[in-house]
Length: 210
Ligand code: SF4
Image 1: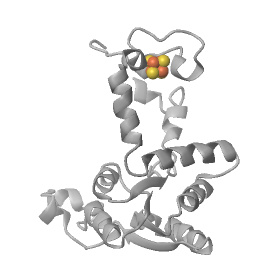
Image 2 (image 1 turned 180 degrees about the vertical axis):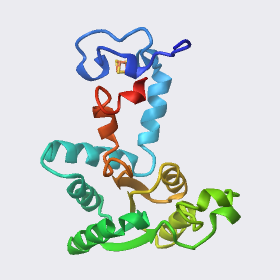
Image 3 (image 1 turned 135 degrees about the vertical axis):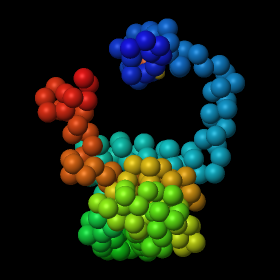
Image 4 (image 1 turned 60 degrees about the vertical axis):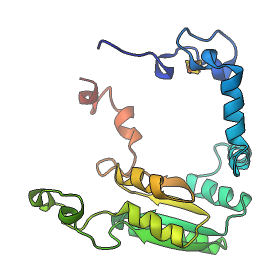
């Protein structure tokens, strides 16, 4: 365990939030110069970043521990006056996406969905994956770049990820023109509750720390 670089996970005071102690030696807040702060503030002044940040904080305050994430996404889209919501879904979660789309439509949004296997392109042809590796999961690839392009063409105002794989989600975020939030984070073992592994590192998942 050598060469550990201390950062926020190694902080015992969280003075940035509580403002009741002192910043630790390695704290990045302590290192900020006025130029750094100005640079960040300028970024919040770009596009609608300030509005997005403010509305996110308002929703947190107005519905703290009252709204589910589904309700928070709806409220977020409404307050930003978004009209068209894109859903980038895993085919394995199409049913959940259907329910979410139904709720969004009931709330008056236009909805356009793109499923991960769209394009029916081959893993072996596009990614160079060994055919042997397609035996369990098949050769039709998840296609997050195409999913993003389709939702970009539809000019969605906000995209919502439902259950894209680790890495495929990364590519979707990379190529989505619209702001993206995540409703469901895929975890095939833990019923899409990846935090469950962390909550059980003192029992069933202690292997993760060994
Ligand atoms: S920003 Fe500083 S005070 Fe806040 S958690 Fe990180 S190290 Fe701790």
